Image 1 (cartoon, rainbow, N blue to C red):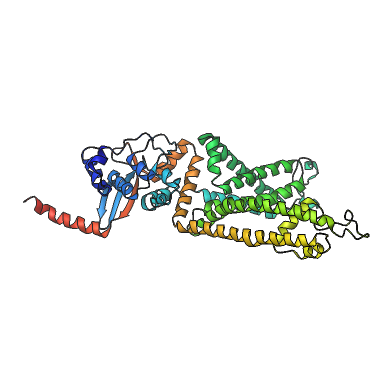
Image 2: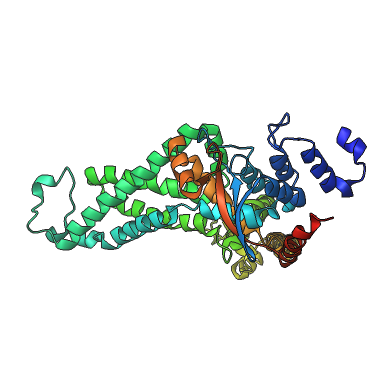
Amino acid sequence: MACRALCPNRRNKKEMFKLALSLGASLHVQNRRKLTPLTLAAYLAKKVMFEKIAKEERQVYWTYGGVMSAAYPLEHLDSIEPSTGRLNPNSALAIVVYGNSAEHLNLLPNLLEQLVHKKLFGQLATFFVYFVTVFWCFLLRPTPFEQRMNSSDLYCLARLHKVDLSVLSTRTHFYMLLYLVAVTGASLYLLQMVAHIRNVGRTMYFLSLSGFPAKAIFLVSCVLLLTTFLTRLLCLDAIEDTLWVLIVLLTSVKFLFFCRGFKMVGPFVLMLYKIIMKDLLRFFIIYCIIAIGFSQAFYVIFLGYRRNDPNFNIREEETIMSNVAESFIRMFIMSLTEFTVLFDQLDDCDLAVVGKITFLIYMLLVTMLLINMLIAMMTNTYTEVSANSLEWLRQWSAIILMMEQSFDPKTRLKYQAIYSIPMEDRQRIALLLKLRIPVSVTILHYFSSCLEPHLQYL
């Protein structure tokens, strides 16, 4: 309140901030929400004030020409607490990444962006090795025809006494070796999930997992891969073949999890998620309401198909609307502009005129109205996502923060020690960056250094 009384004009807030610092104000004091001045500026998405406070907290080690080396304290910047290794939800990085407004995106470039790049982990390379192992294991797996041959028997408990290891091909041995490696990798991923739940709690884990559906689908594939190990022991070859098809499909989906953080494809992956979860879901609800209603109407109309024909029995010769389920499927096919068969049989119904009027109304509602509405919704989603040019950076940061949740505090501190350095007081750690100094600041610094020897005589 005192600050507002002394500085009613918001344009003078930078000067008021300088005055408060000169009078001994602390940059580490917290409000009721546990926010410091730096994190409060991040919470309010005030870019100018955020950069000003970060500039005041940094320590400049050297400057040479237009380059400067500075250390930024990680106490309130990083999502990992330097003292305990726990996750800090009130850190500037976490607030900006999980912020909902477009103004929060403007805080990511420069300082926070370089912090995220320093925190990059090798998860993508590890998953790529795992995916290649699963893929080659699927390619080398003997087909059902080959499994019936003696030279391609797979190991299992029920037929272990019948397997002649000397007759088995090199391909079979190599397949079983890769299979064991893939099962081990899937087990490690599931153990990582258990550690993740233990670190952040079950509710927080599934809440964060809801924002990354590709990772959730990948974990399902890991469970299925462990299930194939059980089917292999029980010699259930047919079930195992089906599971392997699902495993390869679901495992490859996790590439979308990593693609969210790339500038070229990240916005399109996010666009795909939003279209499926928002646009298609709303369209499907409205479409089902209309399709179910019209399917019952056509089912009743087709009960009078060739009713006056004594040689026709509707119970023996089925129509395209022979039952309720078939009528709903036929409505879906009609929405794809395939209605030739329906028109041919509609002329033989007692209510042919009513059926044609019902058909016209259905085509107007679905083909012309709902389909175009879906296109308009997807266009709007595309415009919203493409308008935020920095959305890919937020997604990449969110991926990094989610990876941190799966680590225990000791592992987080170990990773933090890689990209941080101790400050001069040896009590805090900082992020060391080399920055380019703007030309105007360089010129001003040059003239001030030239005038400084002459000012002492004034």
